[in-house]
Length: 401
Image (cartoon, rainbow, N blue to C red; front, side):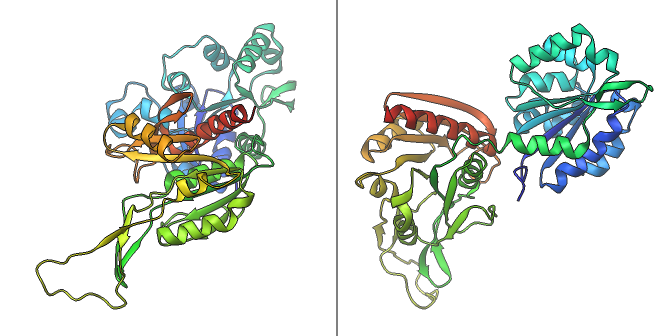
């Protein structure tokens, strides 16, 4: 499975003859499992039509900043949040200069300013323009800001000149984008993630559960894999797929999840408990389906084991991170759990919002540890997963000093 699998890639196409190569780039990205949205400048549409990009991306193409129909479907701020990475290909000399100056007078430059996603550019221009001191200064300024510069290549150009300035081929750009998501900051660490809900049986056809989709846990497992970790994913019942490089253990109930966790926990460096484990289960699960008879059915419930607290209480326990899904008093309840479970860090998020949390592709969070806290604004769960891992590893290192 590619590191681009299920990643949201925003492709910006500016006005250069190399725009035709970007059609192939969309194909290469989609072959790797990426979700691709295309933004075109006015000049780009003089070289390739928006309809072409719509056909290969299977998504509407975005061309205007002030478009009421587009804003109603996916406004520019939502599009900026949606992206895990932005690639401008081709990036003309003019577009590079406008990025350096922080201009925001069209959709593409506005998205670049509004998004926290990785930004890469694939320059394409005449060799004389590429070697011009002004362009060289702009490239250095972008590099200093952390922008990923891809190319250019050398060779024969559309104008007949020979030299540096050709846009990289689509395959080369796709490979470079994969590498953005395959950093090795977690190399050598073994991470265990629990994800999804648990199903607590009432009888063979009924169970008690919750609305967890598992998306946040799976996003963290994938981000940890991309960062070089060895990943164990203990998953409750959900309809998600995981990389074949992740060791996935499927369970149903809280007791099964605890048993699976304890079986491998001795070798784990970081334990991240994302699963929405049912707090209670029926005292007895009937062996046959309960037939509908009386107007009222009474279930006696017993408390499930606290998986996170059990792991945290172990001698030589791993760095333990919990999740608190709340509908009120977010920070207060999260701090209470941090202290009562004696864990290292807790990620608190509201799950009563329609645009984030359970079943959504977006999330926001307040992360709390004993010495501080940090707020993460709404973003895709895959983007938030990477940010959370960065913070977790930083705090783990500080705790070990």
